[in-house]
Image (cartoon, rainbow over all chains, first blue to last red; front, top):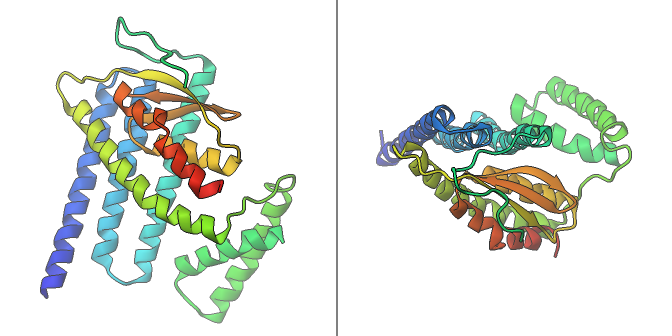
Length: 113
Length: 158
């Protein structure tokens, strides 16, 4: 194995570990966060970063190959579908009238810009 | 024309997925892409124009992606810190942001960029008014200072 291969494999492994870490954070977030909206944050966002870096790592590991293109296409698909699904979920609940949880003593609404 | 606009990307997608240039595969792909493209042109896009981007806009969009990825990674680390902190210092708030973006493609891009960035989630979008749920007030800063919006504007509306 050449040095280049070793470097590529290391980077790919690191990307996969980083991805697994963000999946873990997403799961912990779903369990710990206080309400529907903040859990939607955890479920959709940390997974985007997690899936993105795992797929990127696998693409590096695969090298030049049609399968690499497929992996990158999957990453693009996740980047488009994940926010769309998250928005659809949140919008349905928002229009259904669920008030977001806020820290006691803080008011919602904030500034209009 | 609309049929072709839908069929060409589908054909490219087919070529990537099959990774083969055998006559039978390519012909099959062409037939399926044209059928699906015809279907899309007559149902999904029957009453609307297909979204179009000029070459320059496409190029600027490609430059926008790396910046967005950087923002996503920075924000993801911020969310991870808050979620893993035993005290869990989240302080959710909802902000309403009126945007001067006028094209629907740029509004969609802006809404999806907001949702894609960890810590912010577009919960509603109506006529350029974005309702955004933030995990903590510091995540709202990136939207309210208009940086992302200016970049989207430069990509799609100049």
